[in-house]
Image (cartoon, rainbow, N blue to C red; front, side, top):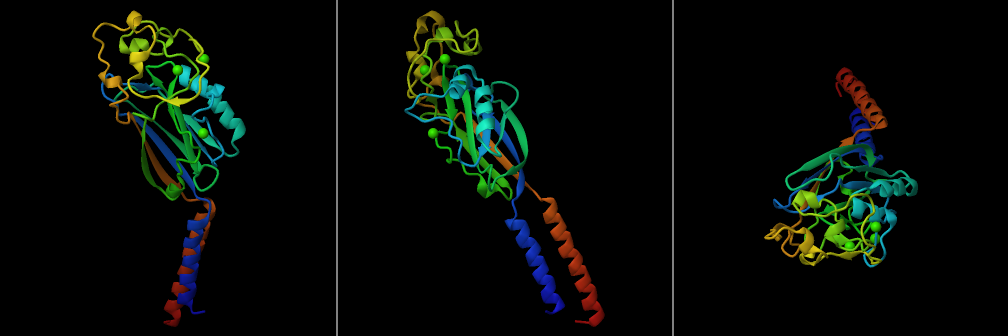
Length: 276
Ligand SMILES: [Ca+2]
Ligand SMILES: [Ca+2]
Ligand SMILES: [Ca+2]
C-alpha cells in the first residue's frame, strides 16, 4: 500500500468510527410558555428520555397514580420514581423554577445522553393550570424520536393548544378545588395535594372552552371575567419546547482521531523523505 493510500485509509477509518460509535450528547431543553397574556400556565415540565418502553398514559383508559398526581397537583414525583424504576438507562428531569406563565421560560441540560439507544425517545408531561386535572403529554411513547439529533442539531416542538390538552379523568372540574385560581383572580381553589371530587373517568382530550363548564363558576369567578385567553377552541399551541443537542466526542474517538492524525504525520514525513 502506498503511504498516501494508507493515510487516506486511516483517516477514513477514524472518521467512520466517530460516525458509527455510540455518540454521547448534551441535550438542552428550553420550555417557553407562548400563550397569550391571561392564558394558561404550565407546571414544571417533566421530561424522560427512554428506549421506547415508557408509556405514561393512554387516551380512553384510567390514568395512573403518576399521571393523577402530575395532572392534579403539578407534582411529577410518582412519575419520576416510576420512570427511574422501570426504564433501564433512562434519563429524566423536571424543569426548574415552578409553573411557567405566558412569556416565561425554563431550561435544563442533560449531559452524556445516548440518543441512538437508551435515550432515543422523549416523553413529557405537565399539569396545565388553571385546572383540576388537565395536562399535556404524549400518549405514544415513540412519537418523539430524537435519534436524528444524535450527532448534534436542534428541534422545536409545539405543546398544548386545541386538541392537545388532556383531562386526566381523575378529578371533577370544579373551581372549588382547582389549582392556581389565585393567579387568575378567581376564588376558591385547592388547599393541599389530591383534593377535589373523584371523577372516576378516563383520560380524554379537552375541547372547547372547558372553564365555562366548571362547576361553581358563579361562586368563584368575578363578574366580567375575560375567558378569551383560556378558550381552547381558539387556542394555538401555548408551549414551545426547544431541544438543542451538542454531540460529545467520546474518549475512544479522540484516541482514534489522534492516532490517525499521528500516523498521517509519520506518512507525511516519509513522503517528504522519499519524495513520493
Ligand atoms: Ca399511551
Ligand atoms: Ca377532570
Ligand atoms: Ca385525585
